[in-house]
Amino acid sequence: MEMKKRKKNVTLTHVTLKRRLDGGRSCQQANEENHGWLTSEEEEVTVNYCLQLAQRGFPLTHEGLKQHVDTLLHARLGSTFPKTGVGKLWTHCFLNRHSKRLHRYWSAPLDTERGHAVNENTNEAWFELLKSTMDENNIEPDCIWAADETGFQPGTGGQRQRVIGPAKKKIQHQQESGNRENITVMVSICADGDSIAPLIIYKGQSFSTNWHQDNTLKAS
Image 1 (cartoon, helix red, strand yellow):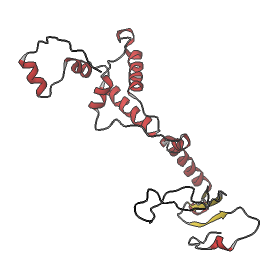
Image 2 (cartoon, helix red, strand yellow; image 1 turned 135 degrees about the horizontal axis):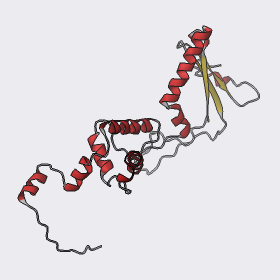
Image 3 (cartoon, one colour; image 1 turned 90 degrees about the vertical axis):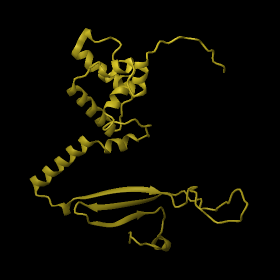
Image 4 (cartoon, one colour; image 1 turned 45 degrees about the vertical axis):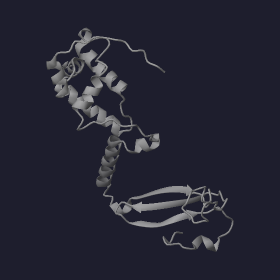
């Protein structure tokens, strides 16, 4: 697509040109950075807010950061604060000012259940409750056990592997088991670091000897 060229004369002094070449800011950038909307305390609180949300798996976008700051300033400044809020480049300038603590990323998906597990405040509260309960009832660490289970299919499930075959072929097929039955494995570990052999549950009416082959973990 061809772009239409428009002639426009721009008056630029040699002082301004030299300042920009030396890394100086434009008037718009200076206004965005030096407007002084937030106090130093509010800036620190906003940085910590960004860090806390990111740690919980709910990082702010530029739009979300702007909304947060606009709400804060509207509450403090009232009608003296512009209805449009801070400028379009304010969030970029904010991140540049705090580049040692904040950074821009392409987000990666995180399952909600896993996100709940990495909530720092929830984990801290849970372990404080656990410790107080253990101290109150004189519970020793060797009395506390945790268990979890997972399931998998004995077939390879279409996983790709590096294999050897004749040269100059486009593809090398590999046969695999079509077994889609689920096998459950349960593991247990003690608070003092001890553990017991995992428990493996197969679907079957009778015991098969090959279930105990290569049983390096001595599972039952």
